[in-house]
Image (cartoon, rainbow, N blue to C red; front, side, top):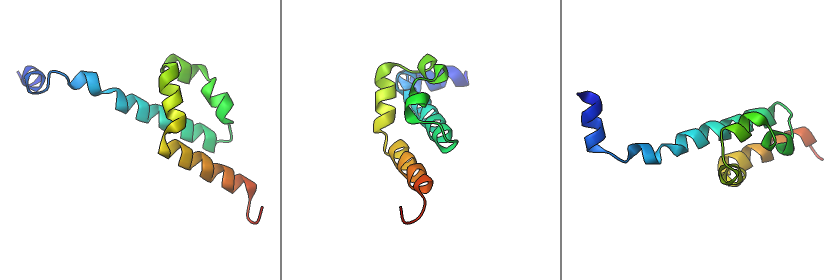
Amino acid sequence: MGGIGKFFRNPFASLFSGSSREDQLAAYVIREHGAGRTVEDIMDDPYLKNRSTPEQRRRLLESPDVIRAITEHTGKAAGPGE
């Protein structure tokens, strides 16, 4: 009965569960870029393409967390004083 009770409390919960998927994809992009892959290579990755729409991939590139991580990775790669 617990599952049914949850459904009736919020019958539209499944419609808004996409952010968790996008969070997972953002973590994947950040992790792969931190491992040295280019953004272009990651965005062309079958893993990412099979789990997201073009619109979701566009939003990933606009995500503040992804932008911040890529900027930090790029800054570390450039080294101090460069």
